[in-house]
Length: 341
Ligand SMILES: NC(=O)C1=CN([C@@H]2O[C@H](COP(=O)(O)OP(=O)(O)OC[C@H]3O[C@@H](n4cnc5c(N)ncnc54)[C@H](OP(=O)(O)O)[C@@H]3O)[C@@H](O)[C@H]2O)C=CC1
Ligand SMILES: CC(=O)N[C@@H](CCC(=O)OP(=O)(O)O)C(=O)O
Image (cartoon, rainbow, N blue to C red):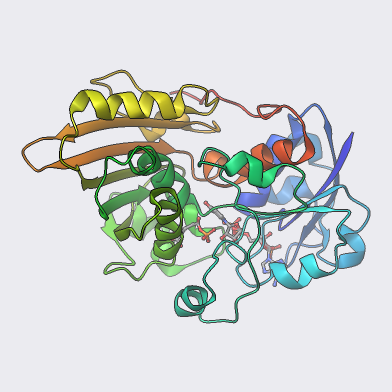
């Protein structure tokens, strides 16, 4: 059995990690740690995790996290590096935060306003070369939830050389993407029955991560205009992405590129023509649904993807990457089906 610990287990990402780890046949759950909730029973804070109800959150410290095969970090940005530094190379550390995702230190400093901690292998196995980067790794940076939805949607077009360099993305997210901590704009009375944009004008910190992924696949710089929006639902991201269609691209060649890219992917499904992804269909699933179309009049490739931000967008992606790093079957313990209605 693989002995795991979850730091930040009282939060949304930590709670989703625990839900998935409870269903993983090769895993046992060791330490579950928190900050302000340390000392409280898990059942009080995460009532959906009934099998762990009697456990108590411990403090997040190197001593508590020592002695595990795998440590998942689901901590606020900037907290991971100090914790990871205390965990030796014998431990697989999987960071759900942003600290180790970006390769460009300048971009990190520009968007996060602090010193760059470094770069770890990136936990999006579906990207070209993604699995190879993770096998045997002892450190993994889990992608941001928007970059997961957007990169899965657009990388096949860039990998096949079908798309020009200017991508435009508008993505809607459920409120759990913002974490559990109380924030005025997330009050029920502010969010219910209302949708709005934020991080407009290229200022959202996921922009450089999306640029990094698509540029690596394209082999040239890709510019991305990314606008996130907040919509009144607890979970889910719906990303509507477009890029110029290069000369000669047809609806047939585009669809063929996407069919090829996802043919062997256990968790990414290209929907039959005419059906569109919905977030409701992936709630609780480690699945991305994708549809692609050619807008001939506009000369643009349009791709829509849907994920659950907490599952494929965070915790599911983290467990999938753990499986690959440890040489376990990639799909082990991961739900591919959603909860409906
Ligand atoms: N929510 C999402 O969809 C996604 C989240 N992530 C990433 O996952 C990480 C966690 O996010 P999320 O679960 O949403 O956030 P939450 O606010 O829901 O949870 C944060 C967790 O971190 C703990 N914590 C807070 N401050 C500290 C500290 N100084 N030291 C140690 N622990 C601390 C909290 O403990 P306590 O509550 O006990 O104070 C809680 O367990 C973030 O880095 C986020 O970027 C990544 C992708 C998507
Ligand atoms: C709705 C909402 O607020 N979403 C978050 C993104 C969540 C996520 O993936 O972010 P990390 O980079 O923090 O891991 C945001 O826009 O900041």
